[in-house]
Length: 317
Image (tube, rainbow, N blue to C red; front, side, top):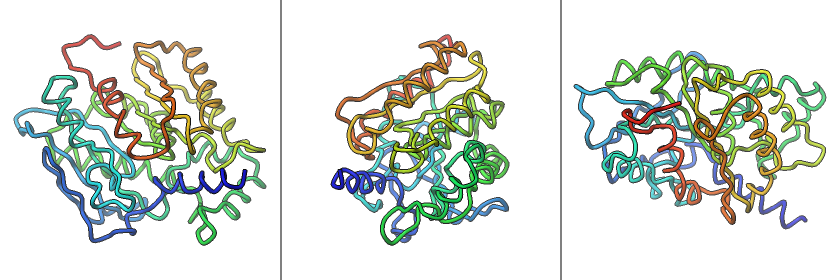
């Protein structure tokens, strides 16, 4: 059991390291173009780097859908990441667009900071927990023996205000986008899956859907005596989006940290289907043997991209 717990701690680290780990290494792409914005300012949260990927075919006379990704420094270039892994989003997105397997889109890659866990933990669900449990999480949860898991109070509402009221208006002004809900999506893995779920529920008129890979339903590193998954379920139950206007993708593996997700994901699936969702606008997949790594997400990210961004001439629900 002790070995398993240590391994789970190491697994979550693949998504937890912040942009400060390698501050001088900026990602490069093998297809399309990457614009880098250093220390993007905000009145809501700490400044953070933002990268914008444009497809090879980008032309300002056309307009493009946009998908916002969390943990942006891990998406494009393994030579610039702390663990030598990447999502390979430039290659995958470029191939899907070039082969007409998805409509043309822009990727906005939002780098994380040392406050990642505090910024990505859904705030309204957190507030449903007892005050004693909240205090215990903030005070005693550890990423490792040297580092606290939560580096501040929960700031996810402020983080989403940054994305919606500061970053998105800049992107829509700077680039040739389709700014409406039907062409705006959000995505991430692990804690990034949680904040993507939260973003659509909190801003259903802004985001038309989310891709939540390996969603970290425990919030911490154990399910034992942990009320966090039920808090997320209660939040979803009370804040479910309209099945006529939104598309949802969830998935998880079965190894390392992902082994903690299956039980809660089944309950999430049941909740969505009860609310009127079907396989036309809701997908939940289990990948046997898949681990909690960028390599695993790279291997399957084309599935949610095609699901959220089908060609416009195809009938959408």
